[in-house]
Length: 155
Length: 461
Image (cartoon, rainbow over all chains, first blue to last red):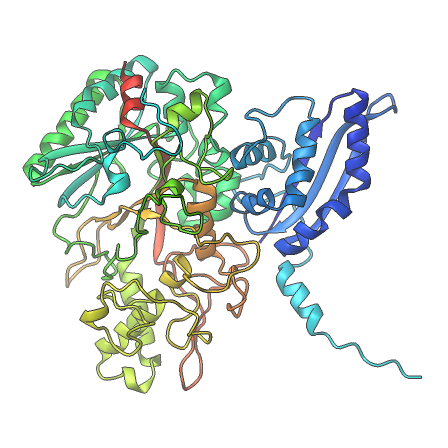
């Protein structure tokens, strides 16, 4: 069963934090690809910057992913993986409300992710806010893709 | 409060006994409470604290009566003086509790196990649990004594007690007449516990290293949490989490399943109908009911292997000896090659459970019976919930023929998308059982911290 994470983190308005948000946005795919590839449980992950109402600067970072299985038992993998730890810790560092506890260990990471996750299911563990066109896991899809033999092009 | 540095050996006199040792007292009762207010909660704990058993050796004088105490996050909020800032230092899974969306992603208590039907532990004001008191005794009379001590302390100080058995009329009490370590499905249980050790130096590759279970001595920044030199870290140090589950076991469904499917066992298992049933039971569990692992005794139970724990699955890549989804193979996959996203080493749980309710008679299956599950861990999410998620969806290794399958015994069969079929490879081809029934139904859950004795004393004041 796939589950959603919708991480919504309003950020500080100072120049350094705003620049860091831009950098995180521009480098997102590059920075997390290795970790997410290794996990083989994340279907899609994308990041967006929510602009301030004035149109100037960024109000919040929005990270949206869909992944196979439960989230909390696997946060340890993303915490241990240097690329994903750096990406999440970077977001936590510019959060408008400093994370409590600080994101210095797995507990802090678990709490930061859960506190800022907008995907609160209609009933426990039973997502009422996620549409799924298919039920295959990332592993099933990628292994099927590897088995596919493309027909030779006729000349 | 006792404070030690991270490298010092923990003080056993400060640790609740059940964490380090499985109590062998034949009688136990597990009393579940909701506090009324802070003053009453403190007084209640103070009243029963003289009976607490630490992890220190009791020598030749085994205590007649003793108890251990667990507090949920709500219980800690009510009973402790921790500020809101430091309460938030506890891990999210513990804070949010077993009915939260995050935890249910692993536990998957669907349908017949839905928390709305639990006898205790769902999130409503009436149902939330603050404290579980685990009482142990050498005789039934002694158990009655310690239970009355705890019960009287509750009556005097305000906590309300849940009576989770038989529609709110009985306490959750161990069925003392069951053979030791045998559960209602007839299996010998509790064989394969982690060998708790205090490695010096610490060994991150040893899942039995006590630092994986005891809070305050983290092997890495992965915990157990809360970590650090702060009020929450001090409060939790020398404690351990206990995922406390009341699990009804449907013995009739289990027996009927064995009878119905025994004819499908291969010829060599058809010596008698009863033996064929034993064969099916072993294939669901990964061990024969006497405890012999299929990996070592694939053809018949063997007294010599009934407590064996020294084996792996690398030599059984087809599941011919032990099906991939057999309960014990899922719960502890040992040397199996797991997906990259899975932790290494495989996490373990300390299991301190026991059966409740009388077994069925020859005439009737009526009555409430099951397992009082005490699953001790340093991290609810990365130990207990991870292993539970594996039971509900056996997708953690490439060996599984389906990524939506489930373990043979305890998975929730109502989970959407679950593949309820069960595959038993044999030399004559696979036996595929189309749909496993519900063998186990959740009746209640509470995530507790088993605090250090110094922390309990500080609460009691």
